[in-house]
Amino acid sequence: MNPWNLSPLAEQALDAIIEHGGQKEAARQLGIPIKALEMRMEKARQKMGAPGRIKYLLMWDRYRRGA
Image 1 (spheres, rainbow, N blue to C red):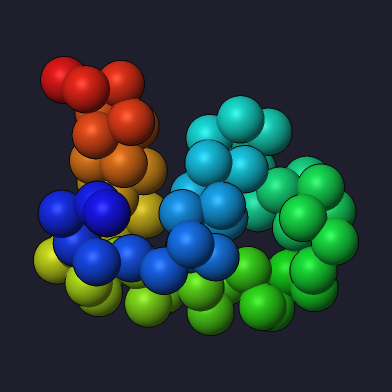
Image 2: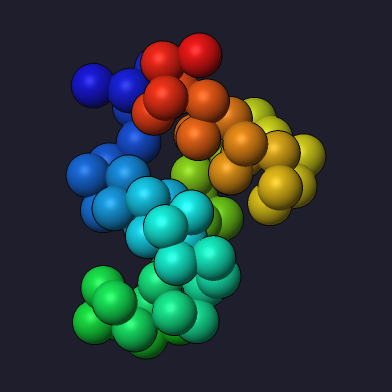
């Protein structure tokens, strides 16, 4: 379990964005519409208390790397 209680779907979305470098490609790889991905990301951002997209992606990447 992550420290923000993100859903497994949100975790997958964050990992895909970091791995593929953008929302469009991440949505394609996950097989979901971009709007669904954007909604997952907004919920994750709110749970993480991040002011913007770059911040929560950095927070997630650091968490995954164990930093």
